[in-house]
Image (cartoon, rainbow over all chains, first blue to last red; front, side):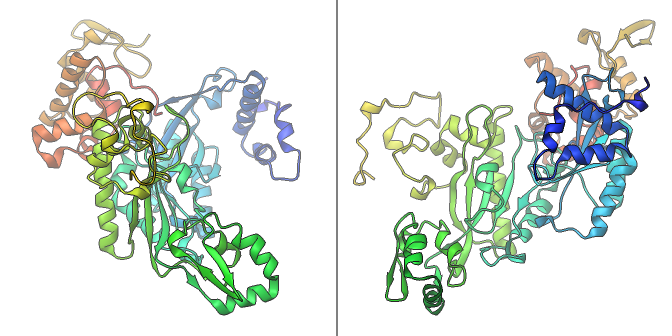
Amino acid sequence: MSVKEMALNTTMLNELESGEWPSFVTDLKEYSKKKPVVVQLLNQLEDSYQTRWNYWIGKILNAPGYGGGIIARVSEKADVYPDLANFHTVRVIEPPGWVYSTDALRNLADIAEKNGAGILQFHGMSGDVLLLGFNDAGSLQCAEDLMSNGWDIGGSGAAMRTLQCCVGQARCEMACYDTMKMTKHITDTFIHYLHRPEFVYKFKFKLSGCPNDCANAIVRSDMPIIGTWRGAMQVDQAKVAEFIDQKGMEYLIDNVLTRCPTRCLSVRGKELVVDNSDCVRCMHCINVMHKALKPGKDKGATILVGGHRTLKIGDTMSSVLLPFIKLETEEDMNNFTDFVEKVWEFWNDNGMDHERVGEFIYRIGMLTFLKGIEVEPDPQMVVRPRTTSYIKFEELGPSRFEGEREQNPPVWNREPESRESM
Amino acid sequence: MPSFELSGRTYETDEDGYLINLSDWNPEVAAYVATQESVNMTENHWEVINFLREYYEEYKIAPMIRILTKAIGKKLGKEKGNTKYLYDLYPGGPAKQACKIAGLPKPTGCV
């Protein structure tokens, strides 16, 4: 039987077609009528399901002058599925906020189909557009075609990855800074880091306009930029009264006041009283009473650092690095990118191969890291200072900054933790 | 196994053209591989190759890209100590193409 006539074998994959939701198996089966290579792709995946083994292995393929952008994948089962011998992925840098015209999408689809299997993935985990299924020549031609049509590739390997942001001020009233503008600014400033990997490992930014964190920045990026505000949140008492009239006082108490994690809300008559000094920007009250409440007027962003999935150490979420910065003017944004260069410099000079910045901080200690990037420690940098070993103040242990790494002081030698000892 | 012949000697390579026996390397081989890669070797190219060789002999591992750019920057001036300079010399990438010409082992994978 020739490869061209290979029949679909998808016993286990068929299970993924059941249920109400759309299925990639259904889509690819349909598509395989047009592109026979997809039959081989599905069959290899079926084999993987049967044998619980992944048959893809990597190799290196560069577009001329580019170190990133093409993720080369070869199949170990190329003797059975010859067209999967080279089945590479091309990473396209996406527009901020994922806003496309239909023309742009058609253009991407045409380029993908002309040069390879034409499977599109919107979007990868780092926010990029993935075009799947090119052989060596096809990958290079695809990169060429993309660039002559105004697209650019990049963001693979030990490099800065493509950015991802929420729609921000373009479509959302909660946004505390212009996420799309900031994404563009960082992409433009650091475009060479997207093209040519030169870090010890990957580095991801994700930008959310407010603490609702629609871009999942805090868990999924090395440096989340999350919108926040200083001072009091905006309260429209007339709208509060309207809310109470419509939903009732009980609803307000059960769903807003008692769900405030720091109990900083109370109600006097039909007026909402907010103790702003206790507010932790959880956004719950603002989300429920979105007509009456709004983020404060003095808006900016919190810069965090260190989130990643399990690799050397377990999953970590990011923790605060800069509690509040303004991101309004060109100067603000340039100050931020200068600061990022400093972080990169210290991390890349001292980090080990394949060490994310979060793991690096875990290894050397937050205080050492802060000294390295010349940032003063701040109580906001961790949720509960002195109840976690993640941050260490100098008086609690010997300095690790110069010379050999020393053992943490044993628990019984530490000062008892109390608010007074801060 | 693929191979090429040069001045009456046979050199074995893998399917991508990397030397099997790393001790086979000599400048003549480098020049030959460079022509195969369509790289026109200048003094600047040789500086990178020589650094790679020295580093490999000392540490038995190809240097990380950052170590390479910093070393080049130190030697030839800051404006050349970046990846753009290296990719201008070796469009196929310093890891892949320069290592091949320098007779270093084939770099594996991207992750």
